Image (tube, rainbow, N blue to C red; front, side, top):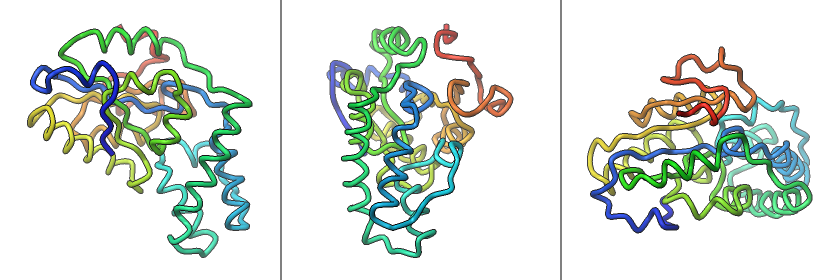
Length: 224
């Protein structure tokens, strides 16, 4: 759930006025479908079930929610959830070694600029598990002060509610939050957190699909 790491975590909590919460896939990186392929292969291997899902079936979901959906389709129980995660992480690691994820435009300059302000905390809010996040962001992962991850939450909005609870507990009630993501579910997640929603059209969804956000960007180079 919460993860403290990196230079950012050394700042006194009372200094933090705004937390920027980043999604990963389609927002920070393009993993080229290697995550969904690892997921499909895991489900086929452990459940004997071939998924007919398309790219948008994965976009904006949580890993826990996706695996529970796969278990339901295969008429299997949650006792297989942990083996599914373990097999998936192994396959994901192998896939990413063969095809490392591509950082999307503007990511590194934006993270550096936001983190340089002592009133900011930069964090992750992602449907990926913590291990999946580490694998997809091998160099950038330590830059994030904490993370709310997808192994414990079926609904994306639950990630937003946990982010609000965590921020209020650590930085003070009503701490300003900004959620940055590439799907309509990220916008729903932001609303559940009482956060500003910034949508970036670098994933499966067009700007027209993301109009309920407070800001819609073609990519993160247009932040400022």
